[in-house]
Length: 222
Ligand code: 1PX
Image (cartoon, rainbow, N blue to C red; front, side):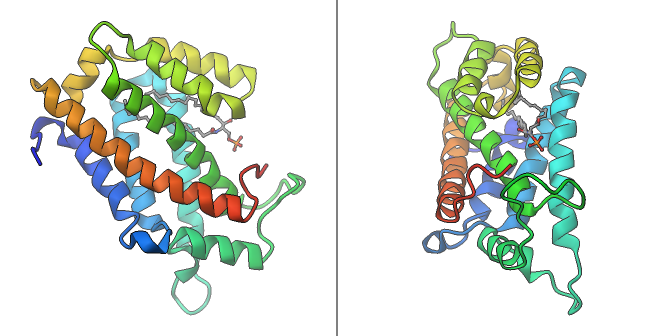
C-alpha cells in the first residue's frame, strides 16, 4: 500500500486508530481507547479548518471528556475494565441502571452509552461524506457533498438552530481540491486511495456499533 508522507497527519493515523478499534473482527466489539484516539485525530483536522468550526470541535471535545471521565473512573480495584470495550461499557451501564432511557434525569454525568451514540451518529455522517468525496469528480463542491451527507444522516438528530449553523459552516469548507491536497499533497490518486481506506475503517466501526446499539434497543437514547 502506498504511503503519503505529507498527508499522514490526518488520514493515515485516523484510519489506523479506527482499524485498531477492532483487533478481533469476530468479537464484533470496539476498543474504546482506539475509538477515542480516532476522534482525537479527527479533532486535529477539525482544528486545522479554522475558528468557524470551533463550535463543532467544542462539542466533540465535550463528548470525549465525558467518555474519558467514565474511562478514568476507579472502581476500587484500580482497574477500569468496564470501559475497555463498547460491549463491556454497555453491559456495565445497563446492569447498574446508569442508562437513562426516558430523558428524565438531568443531573450527574451522562452515560457513556448515550454519549458514544452522539459520536456514532457523527461517524455515520463522516463515512457518507468521505465516501461521496472519494467518488466525486473534479467539478463537484465539497460543501454540497458535505451538506448532502449531513441531510441524510446527522441532520435527523439536530434541531433547526444546529442545522442552520452547520449549513453555514459547510460553506466555509475548503474546496475539494484543497481537501485532497491536505490528504496527500500532489497526488490525487493516492489521496483517493487513502480516503477509501478511511471509509472502510470507519464502516467496520459503525457497523459493529450499530448492531450493538440495536441489540439493546439503544439507537434512540435521549
Ligand atoms: C474532511 C474530513 C474530515 C473532517 C473531520 C471532521 C469531524 C467532524 C465531526 C463532527 C462531529 C459532530 C458531533 C456532533 C455530536 C452531536 O450531534 N451533538 C448534538 C446533540 O448532542 P446532545 O448531547 O445535545 O444530545 C449537539 O446538539 C450538537 C452541537 C453542535 C455541533 C453540531 C455539529 C454539526 C455539524 C456536523 C458536521 C460536521 C462538519 C464538519 C466539516 C468538516
